[in-house]
Image (cartoon, rainbow, N blue to C red; front, side):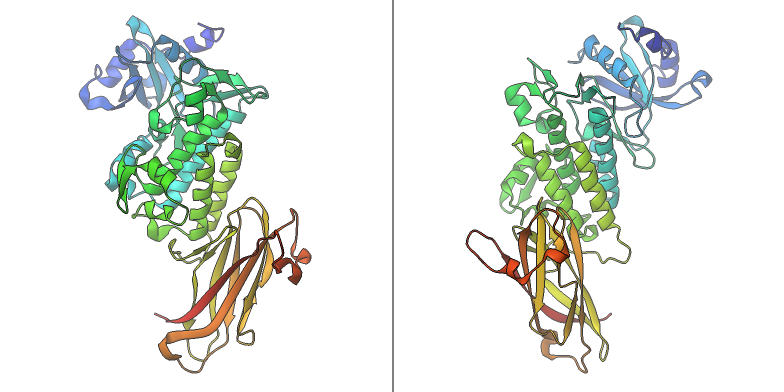
Length: 450
């Protein structure tokens, strides 16, 4: 035992206490299992505040042994974070290796992903909050343990994300985790790769060099699980293809990846929110380590997606109704003006900057006397959304076929970092050699007001 032995002894729980709590590890107390062994639920005695606990017992044939057991004990004793599972105690009597944690009422995330009837009850907003909590937990391991220390989980996956009664994410299972110096990009050199196949960073698998980016890769896999509502090792058909989730993700271009979205939440997702999560998920699983974001950046992206998703009064958007370019994503692809005779009509257009650069835009209409576009130009910050309001002059009668003669041309170009609306000129959007100007033409229709 290390120098923390004295601290650990304060958490020692007698085997007799655990036997009583689990009814001698009876089947009725069994709630799950993994590489370490089996997990039981039980209520401890008054000495432990009669708390309900998850009791993880090492199996005799487990590939994780005493080293992993001690490793996890010494780590979790130091962790204190809302999104890390709380440590209650342990038992090592009679060759047992038992760790006792707080009990997460809603079980593991993978259990929900495994059963569609469970996952369909978790809304898109709730999924974002679960991902945000897990991201904060990983960021704590990578950056929140002091000036010189970090922990790499090394087996981050949906099975190791527990959900409490409020669906707050709690990261668990640190038997394979590694301490490392925070001020060095490479944390630990391993002769034996550890982790779970479908979540395992290919760069780590090939090089045996462990970095915090390996956890980032695994987090990206979980993001795609949450988008699709399926476990990474489950198969799904996309068109005429049937393959594992990450194979489909790699094979799908960005215009088709929305086809993987869980049908139970399609009607809930706004286009900007979807694209923010999709983009950061792809960055996390990039085979180029330099393109993978830090967990702090991931947190910011998820928070932004949540803010956009929760805008008061915003309509639920259809993620298939969009125009996708190299710089911008436009939603909707066709403007729809509610028709109320002799009243001005109003609709919204959302411009999402999918790049890491500043993007300048300009919007022109073929009927400037009939339409007012606010704003008609501007700068969109990296990975951000600009909301446009279009006001259409009142009409006296419904036009034939509900068609609107107005068309809208949107132009976009890369702007200098730090640019503002004051820096926008018409010349910026002129097509010149070696300059890319992206253009979209949007049509408009009237729709009946229900």
